[in-house]
Image (cartoon, rainbow, N blue to C red; front, side, top):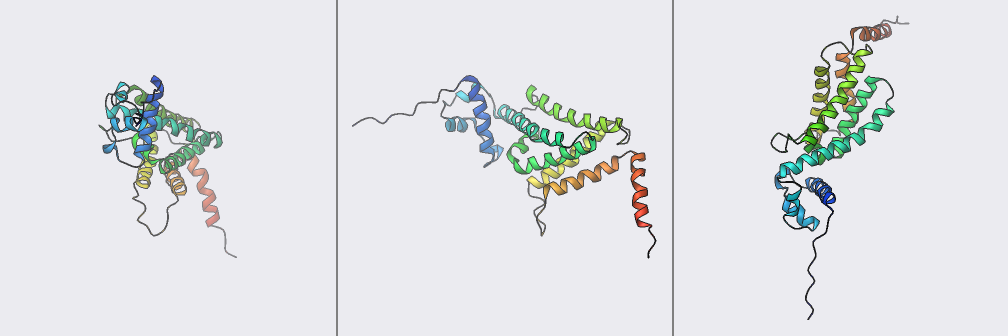
Length: 227
């Protein structure tokens, strides 16, 4: 009787296994929570030795930091063409960012949850993660500054404006991803709601001269004599 052949461990290149673990973790997080994620289980799924994953990630938190970086990279690829299509107007670009942020969260909830996971869930001080998050915030800040320099947004600390923009967008995304808005008697259009929330926020931040330029037009329409 011939002996059953044992399945040989897969021979990953050093860098390939690291990326394979990140991709496998993202797939796993689509069907389970962070608590159930296991480096050993991911290693078994990839057909490598139990110790192999630990050569790249000493802890699960380190792996999740790499997953967060991958999520941020995917979001950048998702949002960039939408921002370009919005044209030169920084206000239009900010609206495009907000809509893309919410849409990405709805379409890729596993990646979104890890991108800004609660503290202690991921290795917060991982250099790649710190850099990736900072780049995302800097991009929003640059749009805020451009809008202020163009006289579109009121003066003030641009960081505060950028944080107000991000927290409102992020809060809406979290509510949608966690199903908190599914309790209503009709379906929620994530993109339309995101657009409404963003425009209401930005209207509050508009420069006074820019706001006044809009107000007379609305007033004129209301004050037309009746025939």
